[in-house]
Image (cartoon, rainbow, N blue to C red; front, side):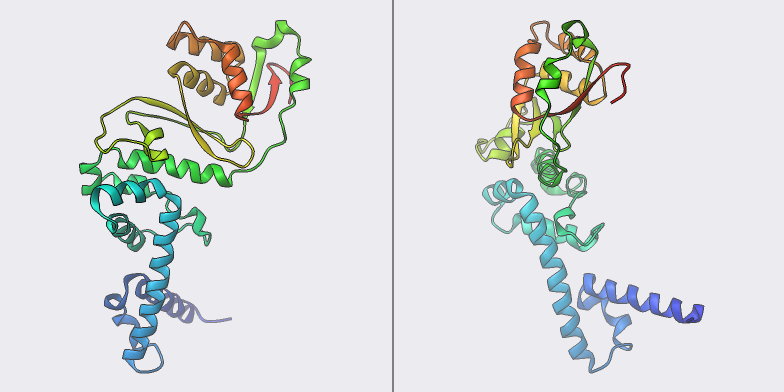
Length: 266
């Protein structure tokens, strides 16, 4: 078994290597005397690792945030997103080796940048695009059993509790995110409250706008409120809320996974 001093030494080398790969040639000095070959050769090799790691992270961010890429290219030039992505990539490691999962904290990081000060909708759009990304990779669920739902006695409908599909996401925003996400927002943006569902019917992820009452209704269902309780929440938002039409829309968008009746086991 290696001595503790050897383990500590190996760990130090690994950390120095990681710092050199991420930080580039400027961060490589502590490692050079531990590498074989001329320092110039070691620097070239480390620089290649650096370009590969940072480049892959930037590419992953571009794939996850295409709306930001397009919008920033229009307002600030083609390189605007890559400059932000590079700064994020140099300061944020991934939580796992799957680059599809890289960039979860990008929206929060953007919040404190000059780009967000000039475009306050920027972090909001990033949060929506991250939710779209996670909806793509969310678990599938079996088709909803509408026959079983139809067999529930009418007098017990209010006791129903629904579990929503794993891919479902929801977001309220003071900006017109649906238009930003779809690329049809005007060049000059004004605040506009929106209530959004991120849905994945079949194999397609989409962002749909809903009313405040529909949003409140589904928000209640996500907390395992009964159907009666969710309707009450929606009616407090809008007394004209139509539960029938909303349930038809919810079913059509594939939001429902399963249901139980209050007081009964699943």
